[in-house]
Image (cartoon, rainbow, N blue to C red):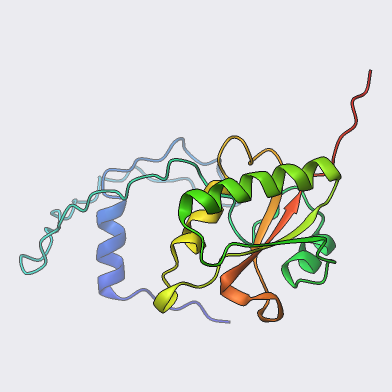
Length: 185
């Protein structure tokens, strides 16, 4: 495979990016390499100013959520095979909660109670049906992952994933709870 040469635009962009960079330390001499002759420093190219037709606009950073929801599809504490089976909906669903038609406060209260009961009973694989909402912009669909990330529930939730179409697709979530630990004294 041959190495392609960068275009003039790419070279200019690179020069701007590393314009004032200096090497950390001199490289060791390679065996058989001729000694470096005293060189005069190469003339520096004048900094390239951005095109006047494309002014930079400072955009404010988006606000951070109050509680960081567990990322659907991210499985840090699960082995690869279990994570894949979980994502595909191949684990047996042990309990289901349907939140269709509820207002947020009632849905939040029921979700909290459902997770607490499931964790106390040692149930691990849950299906939470939120519905898709009108035109795909469901309030509960957006809120449930945030609620699962709140300090009261987050320690119990191991993983979260969007459900497969056979279980409700984008209007449902798989929730995998952590194993119940016995008190060891």
